[in-house]
Image (tube, rainbow, N blue to C red; front, side):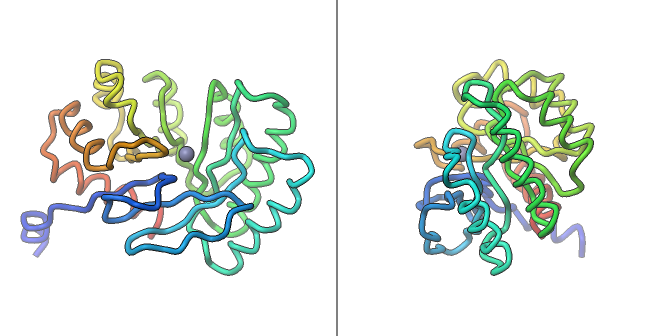
Length: 225
Ligand SMILES: [Zn+2]
């Protein structure tokens, strides 16, 4: 039975982080912000909601966190985020506080965390070490092989998007040196479809596209099922 399953089953296209309601994925995690109305779900989409470090408004933090918590209580969202830390955005102390509050929600409601990290990888790793049991996903990864390895050592997943196509040489090296059990793919806010990202990833890995789809689906299920 198992052999037949793998022989006949080509896997799904899964977009683990997108801002685009229209998608060519079979399953997508659609991001929205707390101040937005809950998006109408299309077939195959699930939702994530979080306070992005770019959009922290000190006057609205409590309100936004409360709204995210309500979505958790009402089972409206499948993940917290994107949230995180961005060195290029001001007030790192405030960012840390808001990130910690969202880690707390992720832990309280048993939901994975989708993370935006720019030049803050060490801080993210520190937080994971001390604070969190839930699964974390670094989205839109663009760091080094070494940093990717540090994340994977902490069982943090890494999601790759359009950078695979923009910087194929760099990402060919990364993809081929890390454990594929912790890899996901995404479109984020790009104009590309997830199928193009999959095709590029399969090319860079020199892997059969269907095998890649099966692998990513297994990874996704470890987080979201
Ligand atoms: Zn995003």
